[in-house]
Image 1 (cartoon, rainbow, N blue to C red):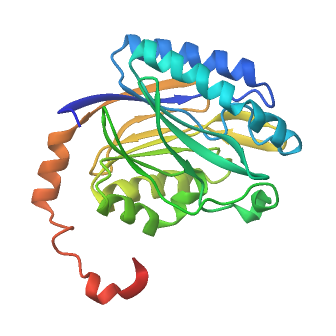
Image 2: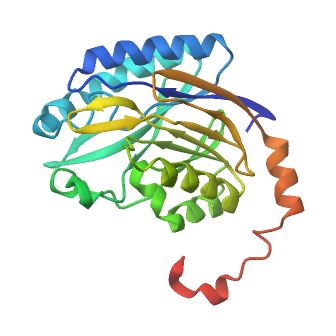
Image 3: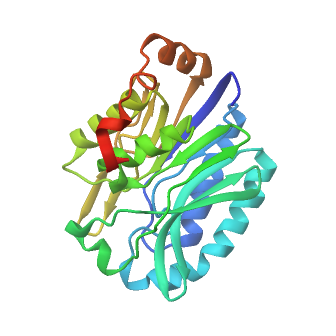
Length: 263
């Protein structure tokens, strides 16, 4: 990881079911943040078409084309880009976050936890593995939306050397406070940087509040979005992570022999 890194959360209102319109929005946003020196950009969850359950298979069939276009754009801009898309494999459809490093697809993560409250488990299959991946901007740990409520996932990624957590989301009203509190907790308890990118706008019966967050290793809010389209930008200072972990030695003071099979 570089000593200092400029990052962005690309928050926008996803046009329901319209892949090409959303791709145009994303490419324009990436152009803007790249001009400001950003090297890592995180997009929302299912950003190509939203949770268009009735046409999930059709949208998933388009995902390879979307990734190819995003790879070309990221290569031109020398960006690392993370965001989730529907993926079809073996007759199943997954909510998959892709990590593109300056044009190269270097990792993918299938959302582990299905939000059964809203029937996500009826349309999508869960993944079975975690992801911490080395990139040109550092080691990224990847999670998606509802995963945020499972702290053991984030501790596992932290122990595997994650420096930045990238979390694409479609987190709706009225759960603004859990979103903000849990993101800050994941940063503080693991002493790493967090980028939580939510979408905004209305999709069917759901109203998305935005409020994307860029957080320091101490859980401090470096940038926070409102409820409309915005590119949030902040600088992560790697030395702050080193200093924080030296001052409060959580990793050295752990007692895994007591926790048992929790991790």
